[in-house]
Image (cartoon, rainbow, N blue to C red; front, side, top):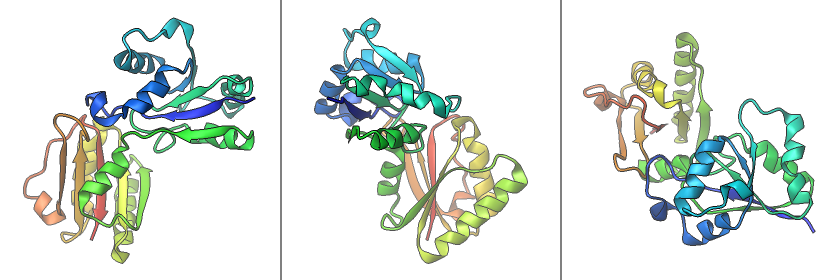
Length: 233
């Protein structure tokens, strides 16, 4: 009998895990001994956070990140095919969303493996919930170009999509968040709404929605802080 692929959520930043991860989810996680992870050190740290006695040395870890090759994915699922449950763990938040896990989940479906998503924090959904912008129709763009001219062009294209009322979500690496914010404020029209959601579920959480014209009056300092940006009407 095949094992199950559990999609394991991880805390966002410094949040206390008991506030955002249900006890039933941690119970399942504690019983798994095979993990597909973005980073072994952060995965081990999280497992020891939820269980100080977690048997790290008795567990198997397979690395799945931007450097992983598609031909490796099959080997990640070998233990499941042999009946061993495996957990796919994001570095922060939920697997498969703004995360490299989706191709492995797709392969699991092709192999007839049961896939079970576990409840946990998603910065994308939480920011949209708190934004006050349209949560019925929205698009997540992920990362946008880094080069200035291409980035400004892309921001304007994204802003144009808000004309029908659809919310537009985008993210950036934390160390480039301040620059992205400044480019958004420069490229967008004054009346466009912008939600800035920073350090979601953390002690310094900031989620505020205002018009671009209002943000320009006082630009927040969010450098090196994880953030989600939402443009809307």
